[in-house]
Length: 259
Image (tube, rainbow, N blue to C red):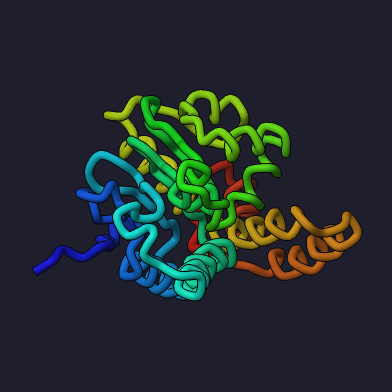
């Protein structure tokens, strides 16, 4: 029996979602995309999940589209497939839980874009990122055309898309795309440390902050000011806010419950 294309592990407040097609460098399959969408939707409504981590089994994070099946799909089939991928990306961005990408090996094509759709990217220092679409005569899918120009500017984004050149993790860290670069053998430890730090924080406030930052990419200042005003009116009535204030006054570490 074929192994599942997505491994799901709940470790305390952290939901680990591992892409599991190592023989294909974790290239996307319909099962994988459906599983990711389903699990992230479930996690969004589960108070026991406070942080989500995406990682890849074997030698890579994700090779994006499966080259072995390329050239077999017609236009309508590609349209439907990318529609399913789009639903996953939109689910990730609307989920009010922090999502961390743990990248090792290679993140290529839509696999790179999957990492960009996460809130934070931690990468092994020997990993590489490749926007490989031009090598097979395609344009970006999975939102790369949206995220990358906003992170590195349009001119550098065009270079990366046009040339499909490998980009070392260190360069992307210096450009502000990656949150942290660590030795490969320390990647899981670093991700776990950050995930536990976020999980012990005021996750309701973190989720709303994520929403504000996402909206700020396309909103006016006036819109963001009003949205901050409305959300803050909700935040001041949360248990986490009261706990944070009490802990500050009592000079102790707060115990946030995400409520």
